[in-house]
Length: 335
Image (cartoon, rainbow, N blue to C red; front, top):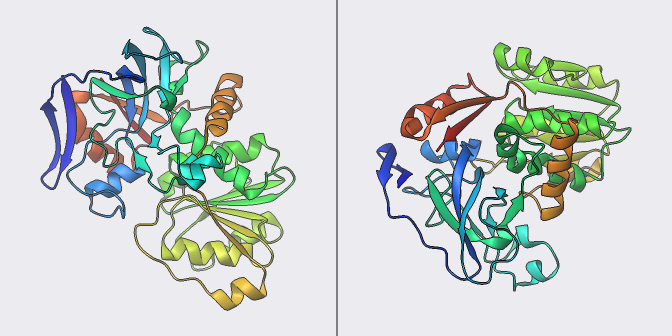
């Protein structure tokens, strides 16, 4: 079968043996696999937790090809989406139902021995979710990315009636915008660096879109909100956006760090203390977030129309280049 590998030399499509599902495992045939911002950062050497070489692909929708002994959750022929983190199921966090914070956490497609940018892969049956017939394959490929803002909104305490700022205009930011609207946020303002990104973001219904590079970007966001933000979602997570997030949330607001920071940042701790700001990390998602993401897509409350660009698996290198270019929102590989 074909499998994508990312090495220091670049993105390659290689030949690999078809894996055999062991007890409790499922063999899945990939239909669509998404290129995450984390994948782009990994290729650029900017991801703090992914070392090269690695086998990418953690955003995936596919069909069950075969099952190993003892598999009861899914059957051959069923459509599935992957919840990619790989918990130990035994540590303190796993026992508390916070398996996304597992103390021995692995992550499929991010340093694991397999990734979903392949024709076939095997995974523990507990990592799979059934995809309803009401969703097409493109929608199914967005279940995993949508789980991230659903989880972040949950950690923020819900968004109904609250003022919300979203920093960034990539896949996660645009999905966060739709989650905020669906939950009944009072006002939502988004920031983006490029004119193209701002124009695209405006089509998803924020109250305003602000140039993130403007010296007074934080003041502009507060002006459009009419007040400080109750919740700021930092979907970029760099020093400049963290500075803006804290300024927008001051006083009494919550900053949710959604993006994966490529490096350490500093925060003005005296201001955090004096203004009673909450800095909240958001790590992936949980099964209930996947369930909510599926429901939002089925209901049409979240749309992915116009967000996806699809290339065949053989064009993986070009697809990664597309994803890094900023000209596309979400690039998917079709196996």
